[in-house]
Length: 200
Image (cartoon, rainbow, N blue to C red):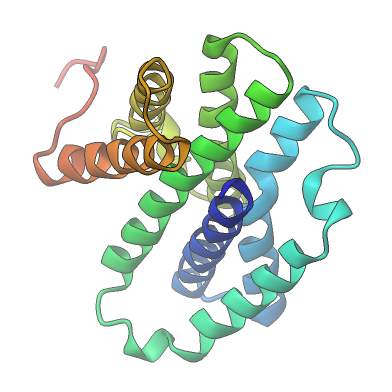
């Protein structure tokens, strides 16, 4: 289940990276690079922080193959995506939901405190997008007013709360992931954001 979630996160973030790169009118090489760093950037930082080296994508070529196939798929079918920004937002949101769980699970396997596990989940989910946005000359979403990291934290808290009950682990994964995704969707739909310190 953990491995499947990781691969699904890779697919979601690879497509997200492709959509941003296409929007920025990058060439084929640029699109592939953005897809790659979006998919594995957060996971790479997470693995380095917990000393799990070589990092995951270096030990398992499946990640590279999945990123490449997902990128090619997104490029070939980009003309079928009528609402580029909507699609980007959707895949990005799915990606952070899945990757939050992957990061948390890595932290648990490293015997870390639940708070640190949630932090690792947030890093895994967010920092691929941070690197993507920096390379695309954008202010990273996580540093803007739009809620991005908060859903990851809520999903992480939900995960650890549900683990205290006699619930199947697969269901815990699903519910925590849905909390992340739904929280971000609702926050954007209803324009919910963290308070700003700047005057209007």
